Amino acid sequence: MKVFVGLGANLGDARATLNQALRQIADLPATALTAQSSFYRSAPLDAGGPDFVNAVAQIDTTLSPQALLQALQAIERSHGRERPFRNAPRTLDLDILVADDLCLDEPGLQLPHPRLHERAFVLLPLLELAPQMSLAHIGPLAALRARVAHQCIERLP
Image (cartoon, rainbow, N blue to C red; front, side, top):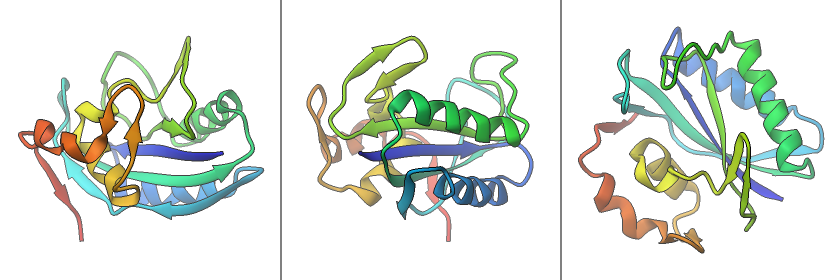
Protein backbone atom coordinates (compact mmCIF):
# COMPACT_ATOMS: atom_id res chain seq x y z
CA MET A 1 0.00 0.00 0.00
CA LYS A 2 1.30 3.47 -0.90
CA VAL A 3 0.76 5.81 2.05
CA PHE A 4 1.42 9.51 2.60
CA VAL A 5 2.13 10.54 6.18
CA GLY A 6 2.05 14.14 7.41
CA LEU A 7 4.68 15.16 9.95
CA GLY A 8 4.66 18.27 12.11
CA ALA A 9 6.25 19.69 15.25
CA ASN A 10 6.40 23.06 16.97
CA LEU A 11 8.08 22.34 20.30
CA GLY A 12 11.78 21.71 20.85
CA ASP A 13 14.12 21.23 17.89
CA ALA A 14 11.36 20.55 15.35
CA ARG A 15 13.66 19.87 12.38
CA ALA A 16 15.72 17.35 14.33
CA THR A 17 12.53 15.71 15.58
CA LEU A 18 11.15 15.36 12.05
CA ASN A 19 14.43 13.90 10.81
CA GLN A 20 14.43 11.36 13.62
CA ALA A 21 10.75 10.53 13.03
CA LEU A 22 11.48 9.93 9.33
CA ARG A 23 14.19 7.42 10.33
CA GLN A 24 11.79 5.74 12.76
CA ILE A 25 9.10 5.49 10.07
CA ALA A 26 11.64 3.96 7.68
CA ASP A 27 12.48 1.38 10.37
CA LEU A 28 8.88 0.22 10.85
CA PRO A 29 8.33 -3.45 9.99
CA ALA A 30 7.10 -4.19 6.47
CA THR A 31 7.60 -0.52 5.56
CA ALA A 32 9.90 1.38 3.22
CA LEU A 33 10.32 5.15 3.13
CA THR A 34 10.23 5.94 -0.60
CA ALA A 35 10.21 9.76 -0.62
CA GLN A 36 10.04 12.78 1.62
CA SER A 37 9.08 16.36 0.90
CA SER A 38 11.01 19.46 1.78
CA PHE A 39 10.47 20.92 5.22
CA TYR A 40 8.04 23.84 5.49
CA ARG A 41 7.55 26.41 8.23
CA SER A 42 3.96 27.41 8.89
CA ALA A 43 2.04 29.44 11.42
CA PRO A 44 -0.31 27.43 13.65
CA LEU A 45 -3.91 27.21 12.43
CA ASP A 46 -6.69 27.50 14.99
CA ALA A 47 -4.09 27.49 17.77
CA GLY A 48 -1.33 29.45 19.42
CA GLY A 49 2.30 28.61 19.97
CA PRO A 50 5.46 28.71 17.89
CA ASP A 51 5.55 28.10 14.14
CA PHE A 52 5.44 24.50 12.97
CA VAL A 53 7.90 22.62 10.82
CA ASN A 54 6.00 20.24 8.53
CA ALA A 55 6.74 17.65 5.87
CA VAL A 56 5.13 14.68 4.14
CA ALA A 57 6.64 11.21 3.82
CA GLN A 58 5.70 8.64 1.21
CA ILE A 59 5.96 5.03 2.31
CA ASP A 60 5.17 1.60 0.96
CA THR A 61 3.85 -0.73 3.64
CA THR A 62 1.97 -3.96 4.11
CA LEU A 63 0.78 -2.83 7.55
CA SER A 64 -2.95 -2.26 7.82
CA PRO A 65 -3.99 1.38 8.28
CA GLN A 66 -4.91 0.60 11.89
CA ALA A 67 -1.55 -1.07 12.61
CA LEU A 68 0.28 1.81 10.90
CA LEU A 69 -1.65 4.34 13.00
CA GLN A 70 -0.67 2.48 16.19
CA ALA A 71 2.98 2.45 15.09
CA LEU A 72 2.92 6.17 14.27
CA GLN A 73 1.33 6.99 17.63
CA ALA A 74 4.08 4.98 19.36
CA ILE A 75 6.66 7.14 17.53
CA GLU A 76 4.81 10.26 18.70
CA ARG A 77 4.88 9.00 22.30
CA SER A 78 8.61 8.27 22.02
CA HIS A 79 9.03 12.01 21.35
CA GLY A 80 6.97 13.02 24.38
CA ARG A 81 3.72 13.74 22.52
CA GLU A 82 0.95 14.82 24.86
CA ARG A 83 -2.63 15.70 24.00
CA PRO A 84 -3.76 18.10 26.74
CA PHE A 85 -6.29 19.85 24.47
CA ARG A 86 -7.27 20.09 20.80
CA ASN A 87 -4.60 21.78 18.63
CA ALA A 88 -2.15 22.02 21.53
CA PRO A 89 1.49 22.69 20.65
CA ARG A 90 3.25 19.39 20.05
CA THR A 91 6.63 17.76 20.03
CA LEU A 92 5.53 15.56 17.11
CA ASP A 93 2.36 14.97 15.12
CA LEU A 94 2.08 12.12 12.60
CA ASP A 95 -1.07 11.74 10.49
CA ILE A 96 -1.95 9.23 7.81
CA LEU A 97 -3.12 11.45 4.96
CA VAL A 98 -3.81 9.04 2.11
CA ALA A 99 -3.50 5.25 1.86
CA ASP A 100 -3.89 4.06 -1.73
CA ASP A 101 -7.52 4.68 -2.66
CA LEU A 102 -8.88 3.64 0.72
CA CYS A 103 -11.84 5.46 2.19
CA LEU A 104 -12.25 4.81 5.91
CA ASP A 105 -14.34 6.46 8.57
CA GLU A 106 -13.52 4.82 11.88
CA PRO A 107 -13.09 6.28 15.35
CA GLY A 108 -9.61 7.83 15.33
CA LEU A 109 -8.92 7.15 11.65
CA GLN A 110 -10.45 8.81 8.62
CA LEU A 111 -8.96 8.27 5.17
CA PRO A 112 -8.24 10.33 3.27
CA HIS A 113 -7.53 12.77 6.07
CA PRO A 114 -10.66 14.95 6.17
CA ARG A 115 -8.88 18.34 6.19
CA LEU A 116 -5.77 17.68 4.11
CA HIS A 117 -7.00 19.89 1.26
CA GLU A 118 -7.73 22.82 3.62
CA ARG A 119 -4.23 23.15 5.07
CA ALA A 120 -1.27 24.55 3.18
CA PHE A 121 1.15 22.78 5.53
CA VAL A 122 -0.25 19.45 4.28
CA LEU A 123 -1.25 20.31 0.73
CA LEU A 124 2.02 21.89 -0.46
CA PRO A 125 4.40 19.14 0.71
CA LEU A 126 1.94 16.47 -0.48
CA LEU A 127 1.80 18.06 -3.94
CA GLU A 128 5.61 18.20 -3.97
CA LEU A 129 5.60 14.37 -3.83
CA ALA A 130 2.45 13.69 -5.84
CA PRO A 131 1.68 16.70 -8.09
CA GLN A 132 -1.00 14.85 -10.04
CA MET A 133 -2.83 13.46 -6.98
CA SER A 134 -6.60 13.47 -7.25
CA LEU A 135 -8.98 12.21 -4.58
CA ALA A 136 -12.41 10.85 -5.40
CA HIS A 137 -14.38 13.15 -3.10
CA ILE A 138 -12.17 16.24 -3.67
CA GLY A 139 -10.75 16.12 -7.19
CA PRO A 140 -7.27 17.24 -8.30
CA LEU A 141 -5.40 18.59 -5.29
CA ALA A 142 -3.32 21.02 -7.38
CA ALA A 143 -6.51 22.91 -8.20
CA LEU A 144 -6.93 23.69 -4.50
CA ARG A 145 -3.67 25.60 -3.97
CA ALA A 146 -5.44 28.95 -4.36
CA ARG A 147 -7.78 28.11 -1.48
CA VAL A 148 -4.86 27.91 0.96
CA ALA A 149 -2.78 30.77 -0.50
CA HIS A 150 -3.69 33.05 2.44
CA GLN A 151 -2.07 30.68 4.97
CA CYS A 152 1.45 31.61 6.06
CA ILE A 153 3.89 28.95 4.86
CA GLU A 154 7.51 28.96 3.75
CA ARG A 155 9.57 26.20 2.17
CA LEU A 156 12.77 25.82 4.19
CA PRO A 157 16.20 25.48 2.55
